[in-house]
Amino acid sequence: MVSGGTGPDRAPGAGKEPPRPGSVRPTSRRLLVAIVVLGAAIGWTIVRAVESSGGVAPTVSWLTLVAWGFLAALLFVAARNTHQRIQVRHERVEPSRAVFLLLIGKASAFVGALCTGVYAGFALSFLSAVGASGPRNRVITAGAAAVISVLVVVAGLLLERACRIPEDPDETP
Image 1: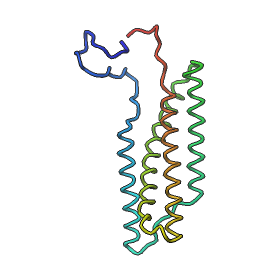
Image 2: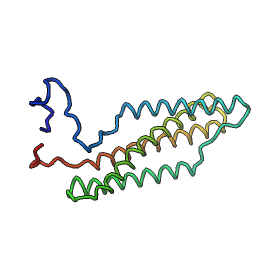
Image 3: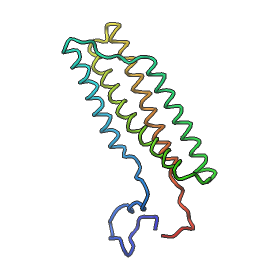
Image 4: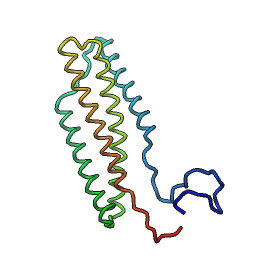
């Protein structure tokens, strides 16, 4: 039974059907939002702690933006190719490769969410002094890094989704 209705072993109103053995649940969007908020708190706290101790707050370099952009592009390409193989052409993929791609997608979503928050925290911490050129540049680079990190999250989620095995209508539980 795929519809999630009631059956002999299910009570009415039990909600969604439990995952099949060996399956992985999709990444929770609420968890990703919580990770972004945690990352923003970490980023803001790092800047405040370094500045309060008399140090110079860290900056986000343009090379970081290029690296994150390259990672996002690779993930989008992997998601598209995996989607084409599994969902469109219904090709069989080696289980170890599918698990690897799934883990890469999930890990990218989690790390991208954390970095999105950290970069957003950096940008927010410099907003009060945005009139000067130094803080303005820090806000711009950290904000751009946060946006590119969101692209990494989206690409990771798309790769995770591409790894889903289509339901076989001939298969009965």
